[in-house]
Amino acid sequence: MQTQALKERIATELSRSRSRTALLADAVDDGDLVKQHSPLMSPLVWDLAHVGNQEELWLVRDVGKREPVRSDIDELYDALRHPRRERPKLPLLGPVEARGYVAEVRRKVLDVLDAVRLEGDPLVDRGFAFGMIAQHEQQHDETMLATHQLRVGEPVLSAPPPPAARVRVAGEVLIPAGPFTMGTSTEPWALDNERPAHRVDLPAYYIDAAPVTNGQYAEFIADGGYDDPRWWTPEGWRHRVTAGLAAPMHWRRDGDRWYYTRFGRTSPVAPDEPVVHVCFHEAQAYAAWAGKRLPTEAEWEKAARFDPASGRSRRYPWGDEDPTPRHANLGQRHLSPAPVGAYPDGASPLGVHQLIGDVWEWVDTDFHGYPGFAAFPYREYSEVFFGTDYKVLRGGSFGTDPVACRGTFRNWDFPIRRQIFAGFRCARDPRPGEEVD
Ligand code: AVJ
Ligand code: FE
Image (cartoon, rainbow, N blue to C red):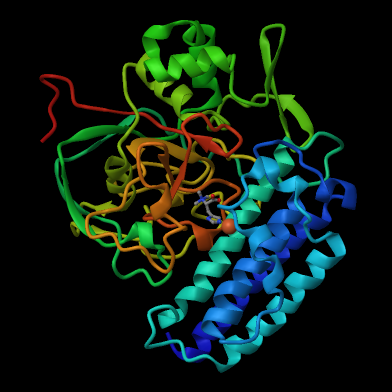
């Protein structure tokens, strides 16, 4: 991309992320902005100043070599120093100060962007650090949206409903055996954990054509799935018992009907929407009950990116084109997942639907670096989380912005977490005698 076009794209991405941050922050009054709505989440005003602080650290100081705006507050907004539950007790910037701070940082960043050469140094080559910061802000915007979902009170957010189903999608898709390229070494704004591209050879497997729906999940509940340890791993069952899990988060039963509350509005659970707000253990138990399993991360990515016609891995299930509203339910345009079948134009060549958008999908893989992983530009983005504590999630949700969502993008969380916009789909090995080639 020409320098000027790239700089314009960066400016657009930075301003889009800031509009969303402002919308999510301004939707509540100052009392709600500084208060903690759940021990799992930061006060919204922490996220607000934290995105400004990260922007200052990387773009004002590191890339721009400018004087700090406020070096005295770095410590307060260092996520690894203070767990979320403790953040409301910190001497945080108040609403007026936080808004003033992020605006001042942004003015300087636009000045830096004007002057910078976007090549040479890998930190700025093809605009990487700016893309990283735009994505970082959008990631926090999804976190802020999750905080809104946990907030109690009158609804303050609204959006048009997602599109209706346009095609019937059901059953499973066979992904043929063979190698594919996982990860990327070329996508300019891909983060360190998505790199490098490497070959992975997989045996044939089946994967669900769509995420598991509320209707399907309700059958698991009705069949006593939450009361039968056979479906759960020992760790999952322990958690199911101690946490008293009985249905997805935000579901409530009234007689024989299920209701959920989303962003302050209660309605009957829509049977054809992907289930959301389940933890890894619930996903794993459902899959076992259904006679299947969760896909591995490699299986998910092959289903999403492998093009059987060319043998190549593409950026998205539909090809290399950036996501548009035609392809996927992304970007907080709607405040819920769309029904299964709503995005035929976003399907993969083999007919796997809604891999991108709607709900994050739990996969049965711990968060690790790919072969040849190198932390860049800081260990604290990914590397410090590698190990067996975190499970990977793929594909983004209705709350994820397109700039922070790719066929290679990797999210991760503890397997007990449910406040994120997470669902799943199932996979399985071919059965003996089943024709797979
Ligand atoms: C990739 C969503 C797990 O929110 O914890 C934000 C992204 N990293 N600030 C998170 C992130 C630093 C991260 N996740
Ligand atoms: Fe952050």
